[in-house]
Amino acid sequence: MQTETNTPSLKKISFSTTIKASKEKVWAVLWNDESYRSWTSAFTQGSYAVSDWNEGSKILFLDGKGSGMYSTIAKKIPNEFMSFKHIGEVKDNIELPVDEQTQSWSGSMEDYILKEKDGSTELTIEMDVVESFMDYFKKTFPVAIDNIKNLAETKIAITIEAMIDAPVAKAWEYWSKPEHIMQWCNASPDWHAPHAENDLQVGGKFVTRMEAKDGSFGFDFAGVYDEVKTNELITYTLGDERKVSIHFSSDGNTTKIVETFEAEEENPVEMQRGGWQAILDNFKNHVETN
Image (cartoon, rainbow, N blue to C red; front, side, top):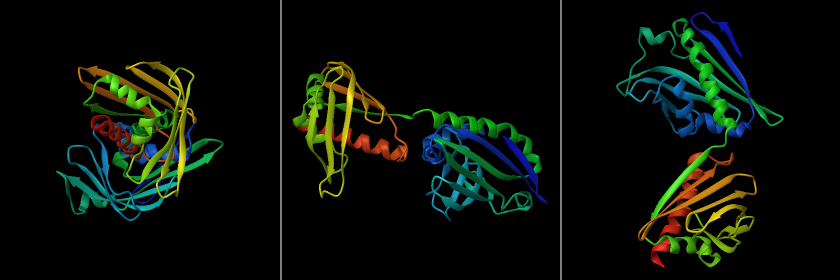
């Protein structure tokens, strides 16, 4: 849906859609770097943003060629509202002072409003636009919104990998034996895995207890195996229905592990990627040093 209102020098245009996903998932799609680049490709290939994403901070909206505009984050309510105040133009990676041309839109606002109801999220985007850009945004923003909708309604798959300096049989054993799992299954030195159970067969269950060493927090990482091919492939389903696959490929005394998992919605994608990669790196170190 699209609406339009007028101000003396700018027109306000509004787009809205309903997305079958939580507001947390839609928010993550909007502002996580990887998905942001994806949905903003509707405007130009290579689009990206540079910011610490805090309220009051500067943000650069760039096209991959050193051009774009600089703005500020005027208001931020996580998972509910984001407002940008656009200031001036960027050319050749240089922020230009406001001139007569940019004066016509400097100070314009762009707002993102998220409202969740019954498991779906209504996303509304309102923005001030100069007349000369009205047709452009009427054409491109619906495409961008479709991109957002598709990304939010599809589970995000994250892939990590590692090259292990060990034969595949050893890597497989160290991946699957509980006494080894307890040695490597942690993302940082202040965490550990004090208990692990693993029935590595189709329909078999596994559970690894992951805890902060100071006892402040812990959880069970658990699931059921869907497919097991010795020294080649493991797939399983976690308790929240997310899917995970681990591929093992051998090249003599070297083993490549490629792990793909569906992201959850509570934490940023890059945080999840970093955490799972840290665990995989711990596995690599454990195999290579034992």
